Each structure stands twice: as structure tokens, then as C-alpha cells.
Image 1 (cartoon, rainbow, N blue to C red):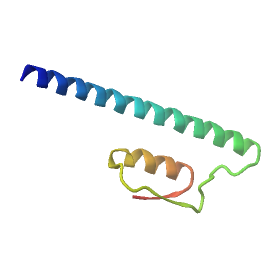
Image 2: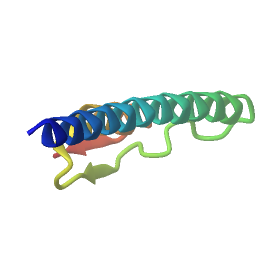
Image 3: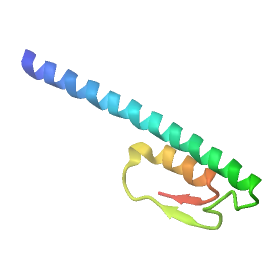
Length: 80
């Protein structure tokens, strides 16, 4: 029983670490998008590359909020 509990604890820790890494990666990518959008705006280019586009995500409910925020930040319409 102790071996099973230790394995479960190890899996939980790995899952939590993966979740943190994912959120950090999303935050870094969102910052990169903001930086690129600013540069594009200064160059007179379109700042919202997904303007008028609809993005459909099927599945992966755990990242739905991140996907919605990213798509909408880029001017798109998000559907799940």
C-alpha cells in the first residue's frame, strides 16, 4: 500500500509540475505575441492577425481558458 501511495504522490507532483510549466510557457508566448503585435503596430502592419477568424478547439478542457484568452487577444473568435 505504501508503494502505491508513493507512486500516486510522485504522479501528482509530476502533473502539478507539468501544469506549472504549461502556464509559464503560455505566459511567455502571450508576452511574445504582445511584443510582436507592438512591433507590427509600429511598422504599420495588422496587429490582430486573427481578426475575423474563428478558432475551434475540440477537447483539452483543462487549457480552454488559455486558448480562449490567446485567440481573443489576437482578434479571433473562440469556440470550444
